[in-house]
Structure formats: structure tokens, C-alpha cells
Length: 505
Image 1 (cartoon, helix red, strand yellow):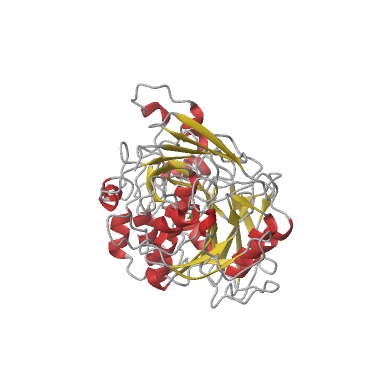
Image 2 (image 1 turned 60 degrees about the horizontal axis):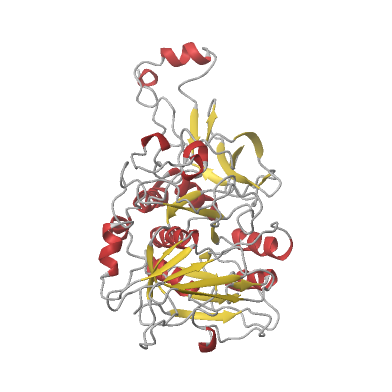
């Protein structure tokens, strides 16, 4: 196998291949469908003798802690706890699907209108290779749920995979993508048999410059309201992105890319649609490219938010395996509340100057960096006790300073706080809190609105006996307005509330 480098121009309609051994360049131009977009940034070919799973364990699967390992995700520890993810169905909207010993799809369908919708979802052999299809979908699927039969990488979960082919030669048609999401959600698509069973989570490692309106907005809203979480990749233009679909669709979980030491990778987009970040730098992945014609597909080292998103999707599969009743709202909150702290730019000790846009300062990395172990543990806790509020002064012996600050009118023994995460610098998420007599049947449209917050937490001044509390979260759309994608309220458990020591005397 030659040592070569492949660069994928994400927002342009060409893929450039440079062979270091032969020192020549060649450009291949694709016809856009309207525009070819996935979220690879670069690919570098490697030799297949390496044990790639051992490489995972020593890098981004490792234990997360501040400093040099702030960008790791504690995936191995999460897998040791979460053992039921094989019951979770993950849909992948992408292209470049082929069943291999390591990656198997339970079912799939092709939504390429230029070819005609078809039950044959695997990439045609004539498309496989640098000239068209490098295997983007298989790479994403591998990171979610690969079961290696040799030295390949292992997926975060053991989920069941479902392929919805909507990209050809890295190009897409927005209506095809919308139909793929509908089909994965169990919705009817004209001329297409219904899926055997709706999926539980959908990965969309793709994006295009547009607004979340029309068919794609409707399809995503339908999926979310059916309890299906949707994970998307932010993109790779290193820009403060404000127009990109499906990231601007309220309710999706938008994922950027971080390095192992907890900084934003240089190519990753950031900004208002950022929810959480995951490792997407120099990730080993399989391809559908056989550059040296040895009869085996090549392994490469890839960089891009396409490779960060499936780590979050795989983690959601672990979470759902332990707590199948989790809703998209709860999953969204859990991922944000358990995320690790990114590394502040002033802690950088390297020799190169770090631009502010390469750091995660000022909320550009959303709520933080994926922590799979913490997310699984919180999912189990919610399964057992629900999403609980806490007294912000629980266990405190001396509350006088707080009273001096806010005044004696506050009932410190009855107040409670719902917190996604403290010290949040991003305001892309708004919390709305409601009350009622029976939240199990109440919706936001019929409950009593109490208040809202964009600071990552909301303080209830006083809990009333017999009153139930719930919340929903809302996110900014493409014009910066907050949109709440569901009318359903998520209950808040206010039972067994710990209180300041003075309240127990």
C-alpha cells in the first residue's frame, strides 16, 4: 500500500488526490446534486498491520481528565457498564455503505433520486474509489458499532445498524435526505416499503449551506416527536457557522471536533449551533478505496466532524441500552450536563500560537466535551430516580452569606434548582419551566409557565406542596430565535430534596 494523502474539499465539488510516492496531483470534478458535502476534512492512508483498536484504547477511548486527556471520552469505561446496546437501532443517513466482516447492516434503502429509490443500498462497485465514493458511511458506521474480526477499529456500541443511502459521490439532494429521515422514523415514503421498525437514533454526518425549512425541517420534527434523537456534524470550515443545515434545526445534537488535549481542532466549525464536541482528529477509519489494487480496502487516518458525531451517536446507543425510556430532551440534557471541560487557551503549552478560534473559550465548544462514562451513569440514575432538582445550598451549614446577597425574602428551605451545567458561556439553549397538578398528562400548551433561563440553570424560588414541575428546552434557529421543538414536558423530580443544614434543625 502506498503512503498517500487524500484531501476532501468539504464545501466544494471536487476531491483532490496527491500521491507522495509519485508526486503528482489529479482533480476529479463531480456534478453536484445540489452540492456535495460531507464532513471529512482530510484522509491519510496507513498500513493495515497496526492493531487499530489498541490505538483507540490509548487515545480517545481512554479516561477523560483535565490537561493532556481533556479530549478523551472514557468510552472503554462506559462500555464496561453499558452492556445492552445491541437492542438499540441506529440509522445512518449517508453514502458509501458496504457490508463487511466488521460492519453489518440489518437493513437499508437507497434514496438517490437521480438513480431511482431502490432496496439496493450498498454503494455500486463502479462508484467505489477515489473517483467517487471513499466509504464515508462505512467509516461513520464503524465508529458507532463496528465489530472487528481482525485488527480493525471497534465501535462505541454494539447497536444494530440501518443504512439510509442519500449521498452519491459525496453529493446529495435535500429532498432525498428528508425522505431518508422519514423512512428511518417509520414514516411512509412514496414507493418505498416501510422500515421493519423505526430506529432509536439517527446519525447525519453531513451538512449543507441552507436553512432548516421545508421537507427536512418537517422530517426532523417528526423524528424528534417520535422520540428519535438526531446527531449531526458541525462542519469543517473553521468558521463561526450560522447558516448550515441540519445543524440549525432545533432539537438536533450538533457535534464539533476536539483534539485529545481538549482544544477545538483547527478545522472544526463552532458557534451558536454547537452543542457538544468529540474527538475528530487523526481517527483511523476504513474506506472503500483500494489504491494499490491488492484486493483489500485501505485504512486511513481521517480528520473531520463527521468522525466526531458518531462517537456521540454510539454513546447515545449505550445510554438507551441502559435506559430505553430516555427522550430526545433527556438525552440532550444528559450529554450537555455530563460533558467535560474543554482546555482553556491560556493553558496551552505548545510552541505554535493558538488562535482564539482554535480554543474552546467563550462557549465556542457548546457545553463541553463528550464524556461517555458520565452520560451512561446519569442515564442509569435517571432510570432509577428521574431528572431531579436540587437545593442549590444543600448540605451548607452557613447560609447567611447567601441571604445577605439575595435578601431574607427567599425561602431557602423550599427553593430548588434545575441545572444543565454551571458556568455555561453559550446561550444556544433556553430552559422553560412549567408547573401543574399532573405533568404526566400536561403539555407546555396547557401547563402554567413559570419562567425561563439561557444560563444553563433555572432557580425555583419556592416549591409548592402537591405541585408538579416540568421543563422543555428550546434552541436557536437560523435567525437566532429560540424554537421549542416539542410541546411535551419532561418531569422534574422534586422528591427527597436535600436541604441546607439549617432547614433540618
